[in-house]
Image (tube, rainbow, N blue to C red; front, side, top):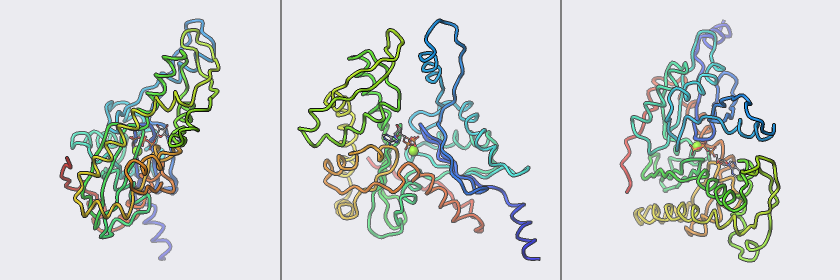
Length: 348
Ligand SMILES: Nc1ncnc2c1ncn2[C@@H]1O[C@H](COP(=O)(O)OP(=O)(O)OP(=O)(O)O)[C@@H](O)[C@H]1O
Ligand SMILES: [Mg+2]
């Protein structure tokens, strides 16, 4: 009898999803199958070949013609954000029951921006939407014990947004959202190579080039070395090979890295002495795609003089934290109502 009742309850219970709608990647966890999927935050707009260009160039251009409904972690195109989410939400429907969604948003978003996220998810077919700060989810996903009485700092470097948050006793004490992240590193490398070699590199090649950061502290190593990369000649539209100096790539990255690290140092400088000294002891936990760049952790550690720990699965820290929060509250009385955006004071 008990088994039948449990099965009936399971059948009737709504599916739940956790959503990390990022600038570059959308990650969704589904309670239906317990799985997390990674999807690009873009929609390809297929075009027909009308001019005589090589198939390779046409394919390259076709891949480029996509629309991204998010800029710097917030929705700027509600219609396409809904289309993007609808496909993913539909996979998580259970008969007539639409899923309830726990989403994350950058801590520095406005009420209006979070309303857009809520609207996109509701339009996409969810029945309820609750939103929690991305940094909190990232910290939980990275394994931080937020209830500790000692201050801990989370640094998430994503594609469009860098977030910093200091946690203590279960609360977010200080936070900052900065519109400078991996995409700015990529843009700088892309434009330098285009100007110098007339070559358009694919995103994957540029992503690989960012790993030169790991050789930056070694003057000798950073001065030598040549990368052989292939890309599309911007004038002839053909695939070509070009040789890049390690130093040129470093010089393209350095101004952006300098801005990012100065912002982190200034954030730390403004913290009260007691909090700062606690972070000096507990260190900084690094998440997001930026944490996957070789040498990023040691560069930040060198420039802040604070130890930096890369989370175990930095790309999935936010969605894993959202999943853990979701699973913790599911089934609890008023569980859904517990997901409220915290009252945060701006930290300037
Ligand atoms: N192994 C890697 N090496 C270098 N760069 C990487 C690697 N993995 C991911 N990235 C970069 O990280 C970025 C994506 O990170 P992430 O998925 O955290 O961003 P997002 O959550 O979509 O964006 P945001 O949080 O800023 O809205 C991309 O710019 C990608 O090129
Ligand atoms: Mg992110």
